[in-house]
Amino acid sequence: MQKDFVLEWRQKYAFNGMLLYVGSTVFICYLSFGLRGGTLGVPVWNALFWIILLFTSVNAIAKSFMQENKGRLLYLYTLVSPQGVILAKIAYNTCLMLILALLCYLFYAVVIGNPVQDDAMFLATILLGAVGFSTSLTMISGIAAKASNSSTLMAILSFPVIIPMLLMLMKMSKNAIDGLDRAASTDELTTLLAINAIVVTVSYILFPYLWRN
Image (cartoon, rainbow, N blue to C red; front, side, top):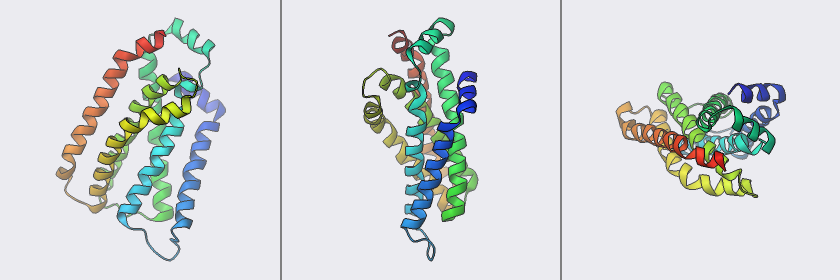
């Protein structure tokens, strides 16, 4: 984790690029829907937010293993265990995604408006989304990095994993926007926690075989 944070702090191009992507996407949505004289419906507001966050996460996490050259990977192979590598990558990507998600929500709410009635529940949904995207896409990034056309493989492998998670996140955030009782989101919350735990466990077990290759 320290190595990734140091590299990000020195280079900053990846994080700044994601901020530019989020800001420009939100502003384009603002201009495209003609929001100067009107408001955006809650379903559209919710869908746009998670679409922006989804593509931000894919672009941010895809570089987890793709930016690592063979020499650096061989050096890490002699220093640390594969379990330590995958857990550190997941933790770093979770922190990165959480920061980007919160900044996206702040900018999105300022530019387009904030219809959320239950802010605590919505922030909890953002946290679950950041953890879920990070745990799923980190392992997929490690698999895709072994292929020649890694970007295409990353998109293909992540689609069936992310879509069910995204549907539950959108339902939870819609409940938070409408201000419904938090018990209405209990099933989605439990399912998301279970999915995150399963993905982390599977990554912990299977990544050593990928790392050895």
